Amino acid sequence: MKIGVISLGCAKNLVDTEMLLGMLRESGLDITTVRSKADAIIINTCGFIESAKSEAISTILEAADLKETGLKKLIVMGCLSQRYKPELEQEMPEVDRFIAIDEYPHLNEILSEELGVPIPHTYGKSARMLSAKPWMAYLRIADGCDNRCSYCAIPLIRGPFVSREMEEIVEEARTLIKGGVKEITLIAQDCSRYGIDLTGRLMLSDLVKELDALEGLHWLRILYLYPDEIPDDLLDTIRNSRHVLPYFDIPVQHGSDRVLKAMHRRGSRALIEERCRKIRETFDHAVLRTTLIAGFPGETEADHGENISLLKAVKFDHMGAFAYSREEDTPAYDMEDLTSPEEKERRKEELMKVQSEISAELQKDFIGRTLEVLIERIDPLTEMYVGRAYMHAPDNVDGCVRFRGREHRPGEFAMVEITRTAGLNLIGKEIEHA
Image (cartoon, rainbow, N blue to C red; front, side, top):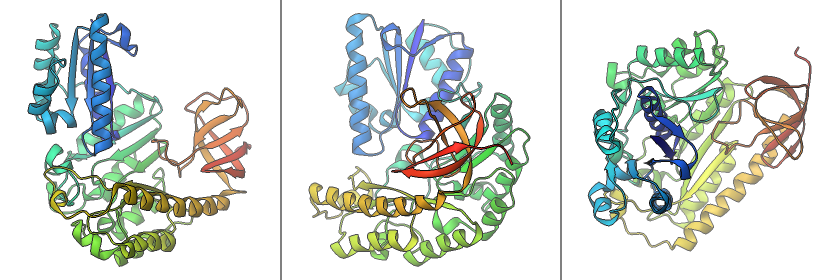
């Protein structure tokens, strides 16, 4: 039986998909990337915001059309199934089975029943099958969230914050490195909170030290740090490490204290600025990335101005802005929302414009510098190598480095002198290793 697997949503969802693929592979099933050749398709969905839900529904319907040309089974799992399973079962009879996240411990039994083939291996107990680039992997260190931000449905979908045991994480990292992974990116809904549920204290610094000591690791990156949980000892650990990149993804969400309070965010505007300033003082070339929400219920034009002033004060290297999306069963859903969709979009675009100007100015600082670049592909049109330096996360939203040089294969590193910028991208030439 040929199985096609489609993964939607965030990197955390991708890890779930790769665990599924590993389970299927070890059970002897044939994985295909050609949907038209699949006997069964499994879609791992996202259900976080409206645009993600729309993408998931469209993907399900497109896959369902393949039943007219031979597809035998269509199975949907993930966040959308967890959140809306009863409604989906009523409205989408073309789907043979919806599987909620809390059913994953029995995933092999459910799939054996639906697919009609034995799947003896248990979800989460098989080696992951990396689905993207073999030289990089996401490593999930916790699941769920306890922050209860008023706009966010993640705790409803993923449950409370649960850290993985450190030994388990380190062992998975060893396995990934042994398999050829050179860059590991730590992910969780809130990486900075790692270990608090295990020992009553923040343990990310301890975990980072353990991972940094692993032989064969080249880059270690951390995503999603909350500003109120970035202690000085974590910064010291990163500064003194061999492999941890000075890349700080801090989703602050807003620059107005009034809105931050309505969002149920911990900390304040002053704390955000102080932690970002401390990071800049600790590292010569730290890179800061964040996200902001435009048009949160009750946001005034003055609050929007606070968002803009935060960008100008901190000068984040990268920023993503999102127009507020109402999510059922969250506290913000029932807040009075007088801002029109068009105005939310206008504010979002204004934030993006301000950030674009800041990023363009900061990019110039890289001209003349030599950066280590992880090569990912060759552009067939320009025949230039395309890769990422430390300031570029693997999710393709931070730009890239393009250069010409000696013969390389994807997954190798090169030293590149930056000669100019092109939007978010850096252009350079390879140099001899120092």
